[in-house]
Length: 167
Image (cartoon, rainbow, N blue to C red; front, top):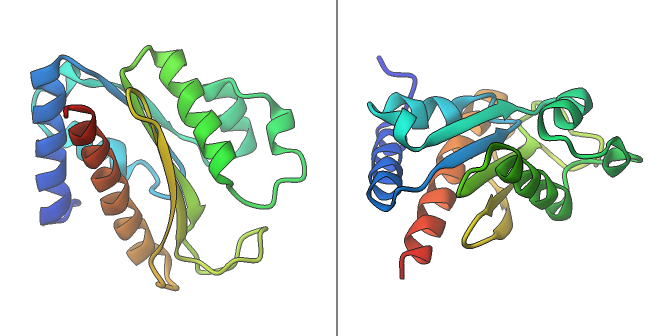
C-alpha cells in the first residue's frame, strides 16, 4: 500500500519531468497537507535535481523562523488569506533560491478554524515565473480526506503553473 494516490504519483512524476527537463527547482511551504506535498515530490527518484527543500509551516513560530516572514503579518490572525500565503510563498522561494515555491494552508477539520469557516478549505499559491493564488473547497468535513484532497489540489496547481509557464 502506498502513502500516495495513483493521481498524486502521476502528478509528482509529471512535475519532476517538467522541472528536470527545464533545469528548474521547487520548494514547498505547506501546512494542512502535513508534509504530503513534499513527500510526493521526494517520492520520485532523482528528486535532488529539482527539490530545493520545504517545511511544514503549521504554527506562527515555524512561519516566522523557517520562512522569515514578520510575526506582524499574523497579528489578529483569523485564518490564511490569499495575501498571506502569497507572501509566504515568495519569501520561501527567495530564502531557498528556488525557481518555484508551492504554498498551501487551510482548514482540514474536523473543527472550524479561527476564521469560523468550515473545514475543507485551502488557499494555494504558486510563486515563480508565474505567480497565482486560489482558494479551493472540498466540501469534506473530515481531516484525513481533506489532507489527501489538498495534496492532490496543490500538486495539480503546481503542475498547471509549470506547464503554463512553458508556453
